[in-house]
Structure formats: structure tokens, C-alpha cells
Amino acid sequence: MPKTTGRAGIRALIPKAKVLLLTAAFALTATTTAAAAPAAAPPAPPAPAASGWQPVAAPDAQGFSSYLPFGGGSAFARSSRQTTVTCLPCEYVHTLWSKTSTTAWRKVPLPTGGSTDVLAGTAPDDAWGFGRNDRGYFSGHHWNGTAWTNRTVPDMETLAARATSRGTVWAVGNLRAADDTSPGVVARWDGAKWSLAKFAVPGHATSLRALHVVSDNDIWAVGSTSPRVLKAVSRPYAVHWDGTSWSEVELPAVSTLSARATAVTVGRNGEVWIGGMDRNPWADAGTGPPKAFALRRDAAGWKLTFVPVTQPTGEESRDSLEVSALAFHDGQLLAGLTAHDSKNQSLARWTGTAWEPLPGPGTGSYSQVAALTTTADGTLWASGLYSPRYKYEGFAASLAPGVSAG
Image 1 (spheres, rainbow, N blue to C red):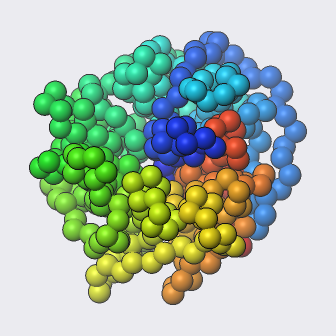
Image 2: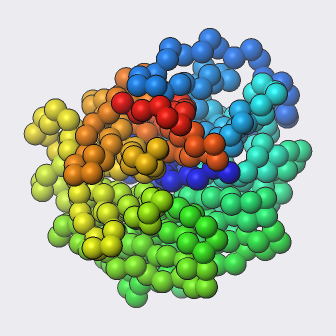
């Protein structure tokens, strides 16, 4: 059963597209594909990735815009093709795919009136798709291997989701309430209905962007909260489930500027890591480049670390960096990174005292790692996009147990 910690954020090359494409939920226009049918012969496998990473052969030339591994050779994925010359706005045709250990990639129809910006599930016949549809409405659907069923939570924007069994799904995001508040929300599907936990900070807009499920009694969700005023300063926000109730976890200040949390994971010893980005590229312009931070909680409390930018240029936009995913592999903590399109920096490892850069798992230059997922057999899976990211062409790669990331 996969543990997904991360989000699929995209940074476009033009400013307006960047604002939309940095969110974990891919807010893009979806066009329904043909009914389920065997896929055409896939393209030749890509060249081996660096440092032990093994690339996943994609079913079409676009690669993967989302990849959800289940282990044992099974997976659910999405590819995307841009249909517009410019991004004012960007428009795409999305195709869903599934495979098992004994079958090749097969097309899966998109849910009618739905979106698949966020994927979750436990098997090719137990998949969930969440997002914003082509009419601007939020949606949620379940695939049973034959058909989609509408399971939408009204007015909920889902930014991350995790299925812990065939009957249990956790989703996080924010709720667009009728009274114009915007609380963060955790939704749980119990096999029959959704139950919601709302997190409203008075006078603030709150959004949860990532979650990590240790067990049914130990769940973390993180995001940000900010006052509902112009150019508000946001701060990282975290909540924890102990099996009985949810509670807000107080986090130390990252800086006096805006910051948001976009990734969370927990080690075997209970050590909690929360990653994200310090500084808003627009509201905090002129204060330095946005920095990738990682908060670490152990028995002594919280400690703040930063992932250094490789080959800094001195330009705010080109030196921006964000932690977009976190996961442990063979006891070592890895961070998936989103850097400026001009930099080839997508992975880092915690040495115990500092972060060190590693070769990225992508098979092309200037790729980002948007998600890190560990399956039950201990294999670590990475997925993300190449530059230019607004074209929405990406990769997936695996790292077997006992194999170093670099």
C-alpha cells in the first residue's frame, strides 16, 4: 500500500501561469478520452536514470503528469498533452492509464464531469481522482476497474489524498464555505460516506496541502494559513490526528515573511519532518529568493533547516527553491525539490547535519520531483515534470531497497 508524501505542483515559465500551476492540485482543463482499450505499443524505454534510479517506461510520448504506484508492477497514471500554443490559458487533453503485473498499460476513461488532478488508491481497480473540472467545480470520483462513481465533497478543493485501504480514503485541502470563510479541511471516506474535520483560524484563510498517514491513529496534515487581507503574511500550519481527535500543532516561525508547508513525512523513530517554501515570490519580492525549508521535530523539539541552492546566481527568481516532497529510503531522508527552470536541482539528502544535493531521478535535464512514494516492498518512487513544466510532460522512476539515491 503506497505512502504518498508530496504534491504535484507545477511552475510555468510565464508569471500568470506560475500562480496557478504551483498548487498541489493541478487546475487544468480536462478532455475525456476514449473508453478503456489496450494502449498502443509504448515508446522505447528511456535511458537509465542516475544513481540507481530506474525509469518507468511511459505509455505515450508525453510521459507522466501523475504517477501512482501500487507495487508488484501495478500502477495508475495520467499523461497530458498541451493543446494550446500559449498559456493564456493553458489547455490540455488528459489520458488515464492503468497496468497490473501481468498486463500492459491500458487506457481508462476520465470521469464524466470530473477531474483527476490528484490521484489516490490501492490498486488499478480501486483508484480515486480529485480536482477542479472544466467548468470550475471541484470534484471527486472513484474507479472500481469498470466505471467511475461520483464521490464529490461539495465545495471542497482537494490538494492531496491517501487511500489506506479499499474502504478508507483521507483527503485534505480547503472548503469554500457559504459564509466566505475558507477553512482547511480533512475529509475521510469510510466506505459509505465522507466525514469532515474543519480547521478555521478566525479571520484567516487556511489550506492543507499535504498529508502523511503513519497509521489510523497517527496522521499529519500540513499547509498554510494567512489573514484575509491584501498582501497578508502566511505561516506554515499543521494538524495531527491521534486516533480520537484532531489538534493544531504549533510550529516555529520560519521567518518574518510568508511561508507555506507543502510536504510532510514521519520516520520510523517518530521524527517528524515538514517542508515547504519561505517567502512569497510576489508579496515578498525584493527580500531575497524564496528558500526551501525543512522543519524537524525530535525529542528536543523543532529545528529549522534550509536546503541550499546550487550555483546561486544572485537573482531572486532564478534562485528560488521549494521542498515539494519528503520521504525516507533505507533510513535516509530525501527531499524532492522544485527549482527555477534554469536549474537542474530536484533532489537532496539529509546527512544528519545538513542537506546535500543529489542527481535527480528524472531522465531529462531540469526536472522537478513533485512526489515521493514508498510502496510496501520498500521501493521508493519519484515522479515529476520536465522543463518547461507548463507543457506538463513528466517522468516516473523507482529506487529499489538497498540501492542508494546517490
